[in-house]
Amino acid sequence: MNTLVRVKKLYKLFHDGKIPKLAQHEVHPDLDLGSRENYLYFTLPPCINFQRHSPLMWKSALQTWNDKKTRYLFFPEKVVCYSREKIQKDLVKYNLALQKNKHTDIWIAISKTLNKSFKNDPRNLLATTNNDVVNILQFIQKDHKKDFTHLSGPKMTNYWLMILSQYTDIKLNNNHEISIIPDTHVIQCSLKLNVSNKKMNSVEVANAWKKLLQKSDITPVQMHPVLWNWSRNNFKPGV
Image 1 (cartoon, rainbow, N blue to C red):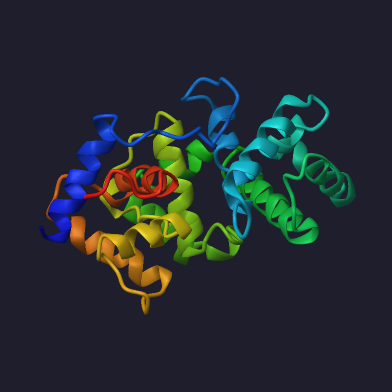
Image 2 (cartoon, rainbow, N blue to C red; image 1 turned 90 degrees about the vertical axis):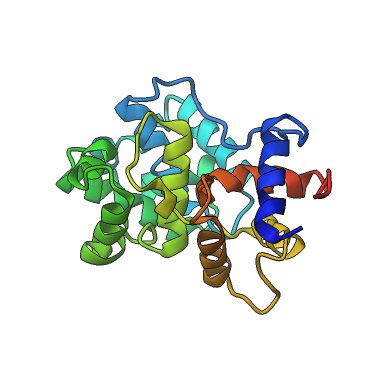
């Protein structure tokens, strides 16, 4: 059985309910999918979701949101009015910021960019690019890289777009251009499925998935939850 056939079989098993969907780790408040608040909630935390346990990060994000004294952190127009010391203290309160200085600085920088250039609304940023993935990647990673500290990194931009595509009402053009996010689970699955080998770095793994799926009706971003849950289910059922 060739690799693409195995991947398609795995995709079908997942959507047929044969691979258990483990607890959703992107926990979030019950917000309107198209609201500014929802877009902000799914924009700022992804900027600091690196080198950490993702489910715990989202748990911390929800705790920070639910606390009325720290909820201001999700509103750029409010963040820019407070001192770095207060912002840092409040980001640390529920461990939303683990790298106390770096995470704080990233949060402030992205908030300032949204405040200065996009009227405190990620939807305005996306509208600038016509909601087109190719344009978004060009805009953030190249044309305005200095304005999007850390979010401009290849993994982070694609991760953010993946999150938006799942938890907001956005309709992205060219969503097949969103890279799969080669975290530990994806890398392990990639090896199991012979999509990659141990010598490949994360960028090469992502490119291998893009190449494999380019002639199929499955996009890389659609495979991410499949692989994540398959890995967490000890690669059962086998394909």
